[in-house]
Amino acid sequence: MDARLPAHLEVSAIIRLVEAAGGFAVVTAKGERDAGTILILTFYRGENAVLFEKMPQLDGSRPFLAAKQQNPENHKEIFEYIERRKQQDPDTWVLEADIADGAQFIASLPR
Image (cartoon, rainbow, N blue to C red; front, side, top):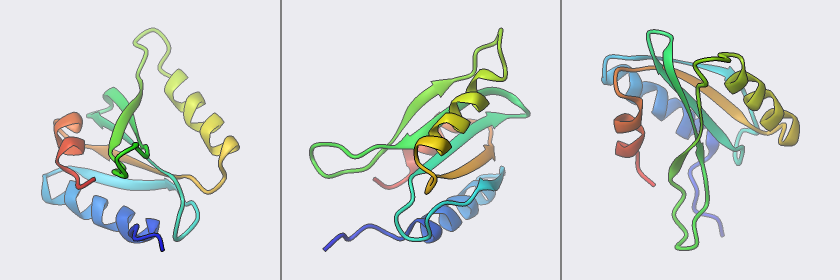
């Protein structure tokens, strides 16, 4: 039996954690309620966007790993990547989080 937390609960918890850390988060795409893939686009005041995706590991953990960084010469590239991921997997959740240190925040999340 899969002991994963349902995606909608995990997304809600992440939003509350972002807010508790002084940031703002919003769901821009809702995926499958229980088992959807979760992507988190972090940035601070609209700059330095990094996309994190929850990836299963051999040891059974599911950490968020950096999947894509914003290209300073093509700001649309990261959003095009997100659209391709949503087309590949329509069950994908996408959160945007405006938070001071996105990488540190992501590292603090449970695996």
